[in-house]
Length: 572
Image (cartoon, rainbow, N blue to C red; front, side, top):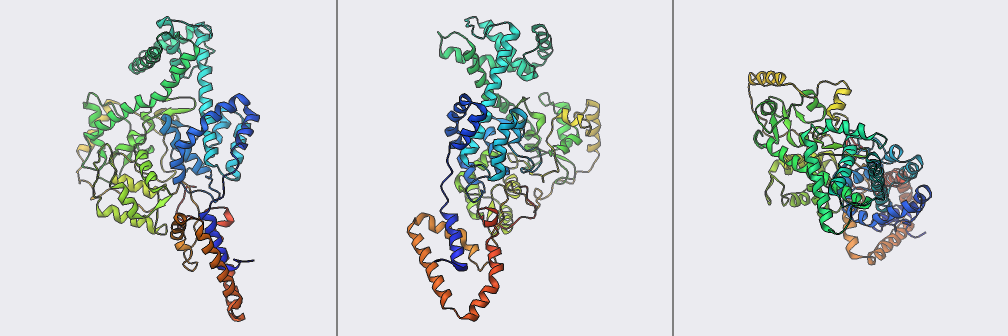
C-alpha cells in the first residue's frame, strides 16, 4: 500500500502524534456509575463535571499522556491531588503523596476505603486498562466531592439527633442555630459519630473547649453563619440552610489555615540564614525558647523524617522553611476524607509555568523567559536569574533530549533554587515520610516534641560548635524522578525522531494542507524504494528489524513519544 516502508511508517507515526484521535464517548462512565450509585447520585455528579473539567484542563494539558490522550494512574493521581488542593485546600488521603512514588498506589483505592468495591472497580478498571481522559478525571473528582457532601449531610443529621431536634424543623432562634452548628463542628473535628448521647458529647466538648484554637474556629464558623443569614434576613434557619453554611465553612477552612501558615513562614524568615530559605537548628530551637509567638519544638529526628532538616548546606543542621511549613505538623485538621494543611506555594508558581508552556516539557530558554517574569511573596519580578541556574537547566535538558520535563524531581529542585522560600526541597521517593507527630510516635521512631530542658541542651550544644558558614549555593543532585514516565523515541533513528517535535510544531499551525505533503513524501518514498537495486534493498532489509524496534518502542506500549531520554530513576 502507499506509504509502506520505513519512511512511510515514520510519517504515519508523526501524523498520529499531530492529529490526535477524537475523545471516546463521554457518557459511558456516568452510565456505569449510575448502575452502581443510582440516578440521583449520577445527576449530582454530572452537574459538577463541566466546571471541574475547565479547572483541570491547564494541568491536564501540561502532563505527559498516553497515545490516546489519557493519563496513566500516576498522572491521574497527581492531577486529582493538585485539583483538590487548589479548589478546596483538601489534601485527600490516597491522592496526596507522603513521600512515596506517585505510581505506588491507584487513586481508585480511595473508593475502596470510603465508598464501595463496585465504584472502586469501575475506576480501577479504567485506570488499569487505558488510563483516564480529562472527562473521566473530572467524573472521579465530582464523585469524590459528592461523597464529601453526603458525609456532611449524614453528620449534620447526627448533630440534630444528638440535640433532639427534628431535621424538618425551622427556627429563628440564633442560639439554637449556633448550637446545631457547634455540635456539628465538634463531631467533625473530634471524629465523633451521631450514635453518642447528648451528655457524652457535652462532656467531651468541655475538654475540647480548653483548647484556644476551638474558640477561634467557632468564631469563624459563626461569622459564616451570620453571613448566610444576612444574605436572606427573612429566611428561617433549617437543615438546608445549615448545609449551605457548613459547605462554605469546608471551603474556607483552608483559607483560615493559610493565614496561620503565612504567619509561621514570616516568623521563620526572621531567623533565616542569608537567602538560603533555611534556619539554623540552633536558632530554630532558640526561637522556641525565647519568642512569645514561636512555639515550635519538634525533635531533630522528626524534622529529618518529614524532610524538613538539611544536614548538608551548613556546618550545622538547618530547617528548610518551605518543607517545614508544608509538613503535617502544621495541618489544621485531619478529617475523614482529607486533611487541611499549609498549601505548597510552589504549586501556584508551577501552574503559571504550565499555563505559559502548555506542554509537558520546554526548552531551557523558554523556561527562563517565563520564570524570570514570575513574582512570589518573597521574590520581585522581573529579575535576571544567575548563570548557575541557567547551567542547571541545561544539565536537566541534557538528560531529556534537550527539553526540561515540568513534572520531575530535577525541575522541582531547580524551582527550589529559584524560589527557596516558596518551593520545598524535593527528596527522592522513599527517603522521607510525611507523618503527623502522633503517627511518628506510634511508629516508635522517636520523640515528636522536645521539652524546654531538652531544647536548652540542644541550643547549648550547637553554641559550642564552630560556625563554618554556608556553602556557596544550595545543594544540587542529578538524580531524576518523573511523576509520569513515558519512554522516548531514540535519537539514533536517522535523525528523524530527534526532529519530530520540531516537525510537529511546524505542522500544527499550517493545518490539514500539510497532510498532502506527508502523503506526497510517502508516495515518493515508495517510488524510491521500488527503483532501488536488489543489493540496496537487501542492505535496507538487514537494518529494518532494529529500526522498527527503535521506532516502535513507544507504539508497542500505546504511548505518545515525548522525545525525552529515559531518566536514571523514575517514579511512574
